[in-house]
Length: 184
Image (cartoon, rainbow, N blue to C red; front, top):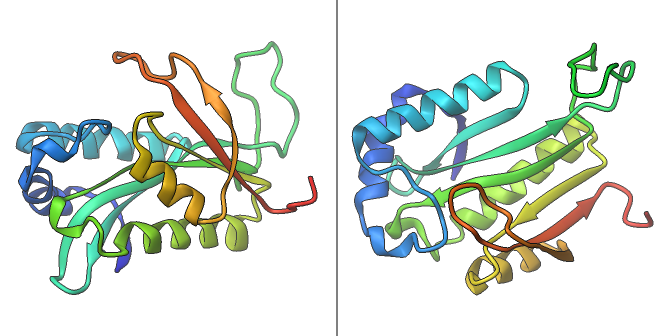
């Protein structure tokens, strides 16, 4: 398994992966059809250009196909002066201080293969070893016991449930954390 920068070159594989079995996406928003996948990739690339996320395509080396996507997102930069007034963007550092892992989805054929866990380890490794972030947050839908178990298997600690967590669809999102300094 390899993480590659998300780009329009992955669109055809992402369309195929997202089309394998749509019934598995009860708790996850996954683009459907070529137009939605193109829009999804373009939006992710725009967020990256703004310094808000770092999106990846997940390439399964067994088949040499892109089988899903994931990203480091909600990047916060604690270096540099505090912006004033609140809500404005001021000068910040180049390296994020905290991040979330999310927007992860896999095609049906890649689920249960270890691809998800390996992709999460690669993201955690990059965030902690290359960026030296203080915290990574992961979340899931409260009803998605499989996803929650996978997050807990990574060693993430449960922080609580954020109610009415998602725009467009009301869901409750359990929050998990992985800290650079577990003593905090």
